[in-house]
Length: 118
Image (cartoon, rainbow, N blue to C red; front, side):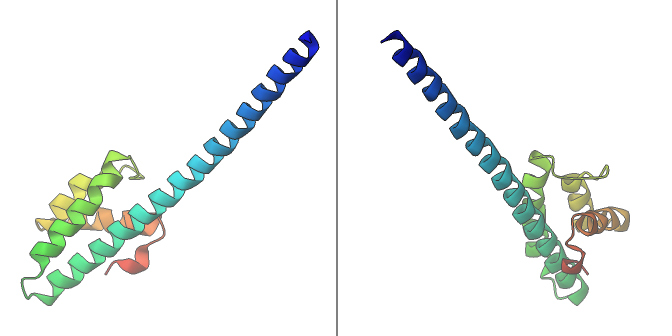
């Protein structure tokens, strides 16, 4: 009977390890998909803000709020790259800082969404 219990315990341990391995692999894939979606949303909103600003009809205020809001999850999850501080640079860009705007456009370029910006 002892051999059965030991074998059963080993089988349970192996099964738990397998489930945890799948969960961890799945979780990292999900995290990657979430990061991709957040970056795409941010860069799309950045482009919409640029377009509204360039139109000069005053619609850039709401678009500015939307792009700053989209930058917060990137900052919180540390998804900015290459020394960019997305939240700070986005806020500065919306306030009219062309260098900050260049940095966030470069960020979108670096993460593969350059076509979403203007």
